[in-house]
Length: 302
Ligand SMILES: CC1=C(CCC(=O)O)c2cc3nc(cc4[nH]c(cc5[nH]c(cc1n2)c(C)c5CCC(=O)O)c(CCC(=O)O)c4C)C(CCC(=O)O)=C3C
Ligand SMILES: [Fe+2]
Image 1 (cartoon, rainbow, N blue to C red):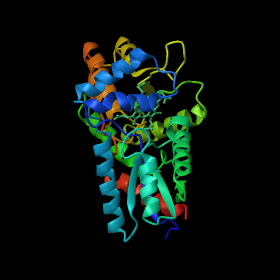
Image 2 (image 1 turned 45 degrees about the vertical axis):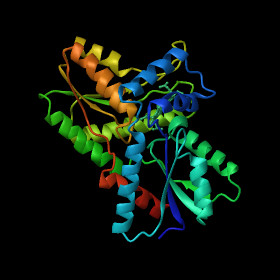
Image 3 (image 1 turned 90 degrees about the horizontal axis):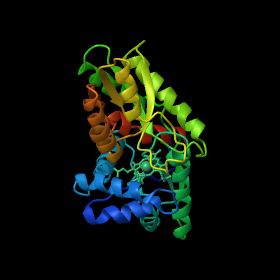
Image 4 (image 1 turned 90 degrees about the vertical axis):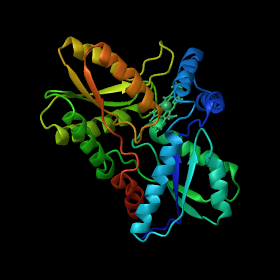
C-alpha cells in the first residue's frame, strides 16, 4: 500500500511545567527578531496554565488516534513523534527510528498549509535532524492538507455548532497565525487559508458574510505582519453593529496555547468588553476524520 515503513508525527512542541517555559521560548526564538517584552508576555500566558502547554498532550492523543486508524485499516506501521522546540526533540526521535531499523518514513506535520512557518521550516527541521543522525532514515513530508475533507469537515461541523450557540446573524471569523509580510511564500499561505475559510463558510453558513483575520503577532511594531488582528477587527465589527461572532481557528489543527490564550482569553475578553457574544469553534484535534489523513496522504504518495 505504501513504500514507507513508519509514520513520523512532527509538531511544534511546548513546555510541560513552569521550569520549561523560558528554555522553550529560547528554543522557539533563537535567531529570530522577537522583542524581549513580547517573550515575557508570552511566558505569562504559559504560566496562567501552570507552565504547561496543551500541545504535547494533544500530540499524544493524535498519535493514539492515528494508531487506532491504522489498526482499523490493517496498516501495520509504527508511529513516531518528534518536535521542533521541545522534547521529544525531532533528532532524538530520528535516532530512535534509525536504531529500530526504519528506512523511509512519511512525516505528518501538525500544520496544514504552505508557507515558511507552516511548511518550509518543518522541511528544514527534518533536514537538520537527519544531518545530526548518521544513517538516518529518509523522511518524506506528506503534502499540505488545508484543502482536504479530513481537515475541513471537522471545521465545518464545528463552525455550524458554534453558530448554533449564537443568535441569528452571527459573523463567522476565520482566524490564523499572523506572519511577517516579508516571510517567504506568505502569498501561498494566505491563498490556502482563504480557500479553506471560503469552503467552510459556504457549507456552514451559505451566503452569510465571513472574514479572515489574524492573531498572535509577535515581531517588532515596525515590522508589518498580516492583518487585521482579530482584536482590532472585533472593534470594527462592534462599530458596525455586529453583536455575535463565531471564531473558527482555521489556521490551527488543535487547541494549543495560541487557541487557549490568544482566542479563548484575549479575543474572548475583548469581545466581552465590546458587548459581542463570542463562541470559539472546536479544532480537528483527534477527530477520527483528521486522524485518517496521514493514512490517506500516504496512500497517495507511495
Ligand atoms: C504560522 C504559525 C503557526 C501555525 C503553524 C504551526 O502550527 O506550526 C504557529 C504555531 C505555533 N506557535 C507556537 C508558539 C510560538 N510561536 C512563536 C513565534 C512565532 N510563530 C510564528 C508563526 C506560527 N506559529 C511566527 C512567524 C513567529 C515569530 C518567530 C518565528 O518566526 O519563529 C513563539 C515566540 C513567542 C511569540 O512571539 O509568540 C511561540 C511561543 C506554538 C506552540 C503553542 C503551544 O505551546 O501550545 C504553535 C503550535
Ligand atoms: Fe508560533
